[in-house]
Image 1 (cartoon, rainbow over the protein chains, first blue to last red):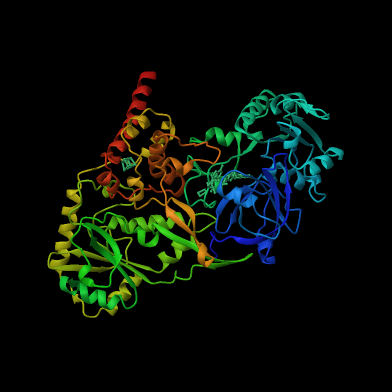
Image 2 (cartoon, rainbow over the protein chains, first blue to last red; image 1 turned 120 degrees about the vertical axis):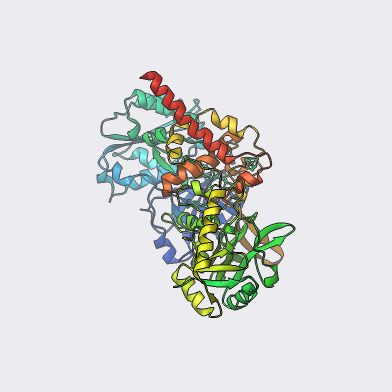
Length: 279
Length: 356
Ligand SMILES: Cc1cc2nc3c(=O)[nH]c(=O)nc-3n(C[C@H](O)[C@H](O)[C@H](O)COP(=O)(O)OP(=O)(O)OC[C@H]3O[C@@H](n4cnc5c(N)ncnc54)[C@H](O)[C@@H]3O)c2cc1C
Ligand code: SF4
Ligand code: FES
């Protein structure tokens, strides 16, 4: 039996700073062993326990798409012990990875649907993974219209600017970027995510809305989706709870009887309404 | 296979014979408390005890346990998995409730896609010799539980002992247990009087347990009671010390930390018992804490055992050993909490009557 507590080792191939204040960086990792890369068979929306051996471990959503072969990506915000230590790492340093963990976005259920991806702030990583995945030539035909609505406080905080620019130029995806307040040189939308969703006014017909962001943005966006007649089953979210093991054993990530690490992190609004628990 | 007799002065012999093959753990007295330890001198074995303060789960799920070790060499890292999991373990003198906790822990650690290899390997290599409870504590309530808990329950052990006074009656239970008894050819045969005496002791022990809780509907009553005022009431005097969970034979929560030896470029990733009764347990780096007050934390302990366990694993997450009652510094009594929960049902019923 292979221990689920032992990380696979990877090497940092590249580091990209994602914002103006430089506290969010995307790390591209390459597995040291080819077999490990095959074992790390993931879908968008899953996460991994990322560790710096000697410093500790923390859960991070997978930002790359399984269609991007050869490496995996994580976008990490500098917060506490482990994430700060990772921010001090350089290309070539070794990072441990345990995963893939969690359920991920329900790809099979999304097939044949119009997909509305709504993100706020830096919680865009697993959404990037999903959009990237859906746009891949092998997968695009499986999904109907794809709409991305992504808001940030200011334009220096927008993640994955290269990808977004590419998507904006593409025919088969609609992208609406917004920032909270007008800025010089910004020709996108201005305003919070929720009113922009209302303005874009996606139809609930055969659609699924996927929402990630800070709690207040999720709340206001859900109110708008409700107004637009989206049913709770049509709204998906990815939750965060403090985690250690990521495999349903250490106990701390429960909301009621569900463990966010194994039963989630993705839940529908309908499931969340049924869950009694502290979050 | 027939029952045998082990004379009390033969426990030494038993230890000598079995410790050749097994790491022999048994209850022993340390600073006035009964704990399970690896025994080298059989004189240290203490079998005249009510129950150990720290449950024997500690042997299979230690307070602090290495997940793996590593060597850091400049930019290179070498991971060393555990190599000591093949140890053959024998746990002697385990009470029936604690023996059942091993089965319960196995269900939990083996559940789902990810198995806890550390626990499972050790459990696989473990032989359990149980010891009947002739004098249950006032806080014991194993007979109320869903696993047919009983002070003389034999199901979760390999060999079961009953203290008959001068001797122990030895019951081989599992195949492993039978094989071990076969090897201990010096054990004498038990006679009908011995069996009858054990039967009487079993009935007497059962009658000594005065608490009878109705746990049949507790899980379902808890379902709609998440916001009931009861939780405030039962958590009011809790100190949040964590005793009830640290000393619970079914609690499994742990923290993971790094233990680094910088001078030698080595380290270990270790897990340490943790508890949902501590506020740091769920505190996120952002400052958000889903279980910020003891109301949520006390509620989580009770719900985990009496609602989440039944939902996830189809069993109650409690063995009825009463340690949490006996050892709580402010006398919080789980039995009273259960009674209050059961009373909610009557409240609901009354309401229904009013509505009708
Ligand atoms: C499913 C999931 C996906 C996530 N994805 C990302 C991501 O893509 N990018 C990103 O920057 N952050 C992400 N996070 C949040 C990230 O895990 C925390 O910021 C991180 O754990 C902080 O660790 P630290 O060691 O720096 O902080 P410390 O305060 O030193 O934390 C100590 C430990 O507590 C635990 N912990 C603390 N806060 C959290 C939290 N919010 N969630 C889970 N565990 C926590 C971790 O085990 C951590 O190592 C995600 C969290 C979850 C649960
Ligand atoms: S032992 Fe008693 S005081 Fe301590 S956390 Fe448990 S209920 Fe609270
Ligand atoms: S993170 Fe350990 S149980 Fe979910």
